[in-house]
Every structure is written in C-alpha cells, then in structure tokens.
Length: 139
Image (cartoon, rainbow, N blue to C red):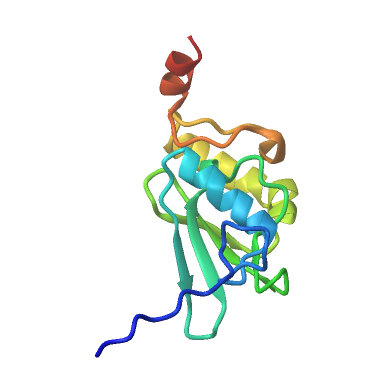
C-alpha cells in the first residue's frame, strides 16, 4: 500500500516560520510582484547564493534587499532592462538607488524612453508599464 506523504505544518502564507526560509520582507516583495503580474526568477547559483532576476522598474519603491533564511542571507538582485537584459547586479538595493542608479538611469533612459525613470526610485511606484500605459491607467 502507498502511504501519503505528510504535509509540513509551516507555510509561507502563515505567521509561522516560513517553510522556505523567506524573510517577511521577501514575502511582501513577492506579493507585490504577484499583484502586478510580475514573473521573477529566483536561482541558486553553484556558489549557493540566491539570485533574483527582475526588471528594474518592478523594484521601484523597494528600500532594502530581499533576504532568505530568516534574514541571514541577502539575495543577489539582477536588475534587468525593459527588454530583459541585465543592467546591474547588487546585494545592496538601497545603495544602488542612491549611487549607481543615476548612471544606469541615464543609459537606459536613452535606450528606453517610453518607460518611466524617476529620479527617486526608492520612493517611486513599481510598475511593468510604459509611461503611455500608466497615463491611460490613471484616467
């Protein structure tokens, strides 16, 4: 006779300890992505470092870098252009917004003028839309 495997008591959707080691912040970020129809790829490289590949505009408003294992391991964030190409890689999202973002913004703004490139991305609204679609949505 086949036995049914036992389901763990903890879940990523309860107040208990997350089953996969996600921090509360990472759960909120993941929820935000799901709300905007975002598709992210979380990869664990051979080195054991988790990597999150995400379009840069979909992380607007995120003040800190997501972590796993109860906040003990920061996720390496691979920030992608609107075309899905790597634009920057960081484990310090707050530092990226205040530093290197200016150069990345200048470069990507020229290549992708239809997309929003706010001067203060840490306080901007995350989006997967172009400027035109955002304007249509706000009407």
